Image (cartoon, rainbow, N blue to C red):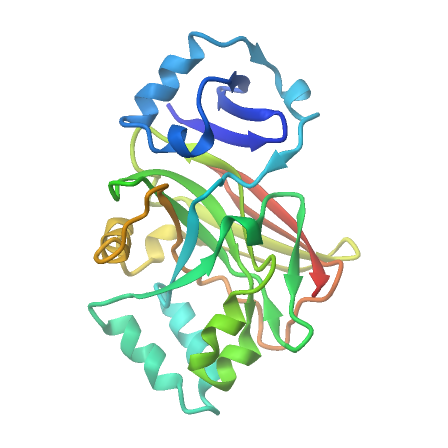
Length: 281
């Protein structure tokens, strides 16, 4: 049986089987790093009065983060390798992506601070100095201070493909800017690791017309979740835990680019739906 943690303007809520329990006794950073988080969350249910879905829907959901950093892994799916090679072939950087896909060491990069990311129903940005902007839907791991994966959320790794394609060294500018990361709607805390056959589904709408729809099972990922976390923790400490986006292979056609007011919906059945509207920054 799984549970979901929601960070809201009215406090932290724990959801189980359609009922929502407010947790007043502990702050987010301390809560998500509690030993045996799943068991601890179960104990909270017995001391709280639940509200129903209708009452919960009146609350404003925030991203499930307080002081955690957000990192990302690249080229973890074959299609991602191919897409990166396509966008970088003119610059001569295509070989780098082929090599990292086959290498022992994964590509890991810093994505966002908590203050620069947004949650569901919020706005994500595209850069004014880019002409090829896309969302990247990603299963996102949460690892506690000890490097143990205890939860999952949905991530939107907004990317400026023309900037990265011009030169691989421009990756930080293509990936890291104000509101370039969205996570949510919750932190999914299961008793066991997420179903390896879980499916990520993304839709992009413009004026209510669907421009793109695609889905992929996370079992298409080359690397294991724990492998990525172990590399991330090799020479760094995360005193509040860390989020890691695990890469994508849902890539819109090369002729597609996001525009202001587009709506992006990313869903994973076990977690929920992350919805964002696009703005030009």
